[in-house]
Structure formats: C-alpha cells, structure tokens
Image 1 (cartoon, rainbow, N blue to C red):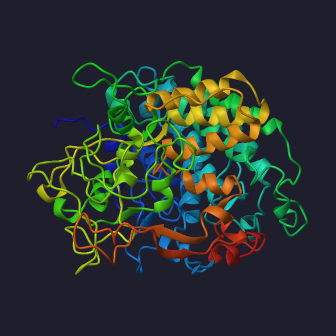
Image 2 (image 1 turned 135 degrees about the horizontal axis):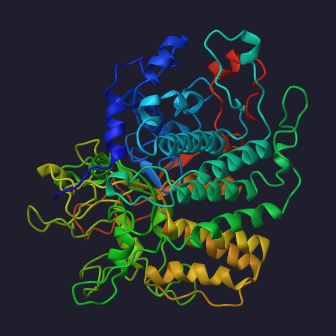
Length: 593
C-alpha cells in the first residue's frame, strides 16, 4: 500500500533526530535563543519539538494507562514495566513514577511559551511572501499545544499551577519557582481562553494533504468541547468530596457548588464543532452497494484522514498496537485483553442491552447456523451481537480475518493456539481487542498498513453534545437526534422517545462506552461521572483460561475472576510526583495521597 507521510510525521522525525539537549531543553543564554530563531529551519524544528509533546496514545501497555487501568481491558503481562497492573491492584504511591506525565507536559508548556516569545525574531521567515501570516499561524499552533498540554495535566491531576505568558529563565530566583495550584475553574477558564485565542489565527482546514496533522481551528474547538464536558461533570461540578481540597492559604481548588451552566457551555462548545459542517460520520457500502455498518464503524478510525477525523497524530506506534492485539499464530503477543465487563457492554443486533427484556441474548450453548458475522458452532454468547462488537472483540472460535496463511480460528482456551498453556503471551481474560487492527495487517509476515492515530472524531462531539444537553436542557429534541445518528451508523435501531432525563443519561453513557471503546475515553468517563468506585474496583471477569482442550469444551466458557482490582477515592486523580512536591513547597498533594 502506497501512502504519503504528512508534514507532522516528518517534523516529529526531525525533532527526534536532533541532538539531545539542543531543542528539547531551554537554552541557557540569549545568544543560543537568537541563533535558533534567526533561521527558518531551526525555528520550524523548535516548533516540531513542541508538537512532539502530543502523546502517542497507541501504546497502552507501557506508555499510557488509559485502557489497561480502565474496566475495558487488561494488559496481560502482570510484571514490572506494565504498570497499569500495579495501579489496578492499588500498589502505587507518589514515588512510584507510574505514567508520570507531569514533567513532560510542563517541558512542552515551557517550550511552547519560548516559541511564542521568540518566533517573531525569525527574519528569514518574515522576509518570505506571507511571512508574517506564517509566523502568526506558527504561534497559534504553539499556543494551542500549550493549552492542550495543560488540558492533559487537568484530566490526569486536576488543578495545576499556571505559569503565565513568560517562560521562567534558568537562573530565576528560587522563590519565583514556588507556584501554588490555580483552582480547577481558573485552569479551565484559562485553557478555554487560550484555545479561543489560538483558533482565531488557525486555518479552518488544511488544503494540502502534506499539511494534514497540523493544528486547525476545529481541533482547538474540539479540545475545548472535551475539556468543558469534563469540567461540567460530577467530579468537578459540585463535588463535596473535594470540600477540604485547598491550597496552603485555604483557597478552595474545586468548587463544591453545582452549576448547570457548565453543562450549557459544554453543549454549546460541542455543537459549535458540529455546526462547522466540515465533518461527517464515516459511512461506507459493501460490494453489493448496501450500507455496511461493520466496515463503517471499523474504518472510522482506520481510513486515513476521512471526513469524521478532527485531529490525529501522524507519527505513532499503531503497528505495535496490532502486534499486542494479535493472536500468537499471526505473530502477536496476545497482550491487550478485553474484560468480560466490556464484552457484556455491547448491545445485541436489535439494539437492546444483553440484560434487557427481549434482547434475545443466550449465554450458553453453541449456534447451529451461520450468521452475518459468525459461523455455526460459535458460542451463543457471541452470536447476534451488534456490528461494533465484532469490530472490537476477538473471541474464542472466531475465524481470523486475515487469511494470508490460510483460514484459522482463534483458540484462546488453555491448550489452544493462543491459549495459556506453555507461554506467558496469553490473554488472562480469554479475549483480545480487535478495534483499530487493520484487516491487511499480519505481523508474522511483517505486513502493516500505515495510518494516523485518531485522537478526536465527530462521533465524540455528537455524544458529548447529547450528554451535556441532557443535563442542561432535558427533553431537547437534539438529544435523541444525535444519539440516534450514532446508533444508525452502527446498524442498530433508534432509541425511543419519551425517556426521562435519568433514563437518557444512562442510555448516553452506555452508547458512549460502546462507540468510543478502546479509544482512551472510558478511563476518564468513569472518573468524571464519579462511578469508578463501582466500575473499576472489585472482581474482574473473563473466561476460564485455565480450562479447555477444544473449541467446544464448555469448561472454558465460564465467567471467571482473573483479577480483583482496588479503587479508592484517591484514585480519581493521579498523585503529583513526590519529587515535584519536594521541589515546589507551595504545591499541595492531591486528596488521599
């Protein structure tokens, strides 16, 4: 497959290849700054370095915890280096250093500020045609990136210190480095204003394919919409649990007063992205010309730069995601294992949850006939499910979709071709994650398909708008409209009208869980909804991977506890690294840590 790498991919490679200590550190004298910003190449390399702080979230086993530390999945190697496991069993503290993004984000914030302070000095860019506009756009990109990194800190740690418009020099007096946390609402207001300001000087869209991946106005708007949704949610909107969460001077860091207007702001922000009319839910027909919900849901995050994608990271490690999600016979490591909780969350083909009356769900026995997505002999638990289930889940007995080495069935039972017997590369749950695995990929033969890693897409905006509107204006017709647009694309029946606000809230949350599965949303959703104590703690289930000698061995198909997880109130926020607490004497630790 012939593909074009985008400019973002190129500049990320350039940044990675620069001599360590040149672009990734604050220069220690004015001459060095002047040298960097006197040339077009080094000025753009400096901006490329700021871009590099946008995290590659395709690595969810070592570098990011959002999938493995949620109720979606298990990173199956329970040993050092796979720290979501230790988080899940409560074995961590502020000195553990697990997924410590605090330092990197502040490095990126500092670099973005330096760029904005100095980009105007690059005469080589200013002297070219349209040079002033180029500098203006570059500075807007840096302003966005700084705001994005602040949002990354907010979603992980809660309220943080805001460093202002000027970067601290290396020789600044010690007392000027002692900065307390701003309140959560102050942080949100600052970041929202920065995103608005950046959006003014960003293009509405990129006209050149080589520019895809660079920041545009809709990207800034989408980040604002997500942040405002988080800010309106129960974790930070009237949360009495944070009543004693204050700075050393007694300043409250999270308001305990509920404000419904926060939901209105979130709804307006999401609708503003929708109303740009630049994006569409991805839809595709099959070979016969009929609408194909499976391919549509699968390819919404795999078809490069399609109309649903708002923001994607061009440089990424999605090929390694595929290796970790692969069964062993395909050259994989069976390392990203869906939980039974996630498997059970998907709807049936009639749009009902498996525990709803009339769903048709059968939890035992084997099917006797082929269906659109399954073959005869499939365990009934996996038969008759909605298309998104088959997009997302690899289950025991599934025919592997890539037939490069012939037709093979995935055997996750104990003695199967991807089972536990004789190896540590096995799924502890008896499932693997299939989502974002390209059908033409085959790791054992070294076959991979390049594509960007999607960070924001239109479906999220629809779901966020519906959720926020349900809280701000329950009964508004748009709530049902946008949820049903998602369900229609997924090939399942629409929700009925007449649902109460509480009923609709639960429906929206279920829909969000399924539509955005394994896209780094669920971890934050359960926390912002304040339900993680119910969803992320206690027994976690899968099939019995210690049993089974064939695909029809019923001993495997038994819901079995593979892990008992611990979730405490303090886990709603990450601990600030102890080294930062020791360095900044005005920095208070998060509650419970």
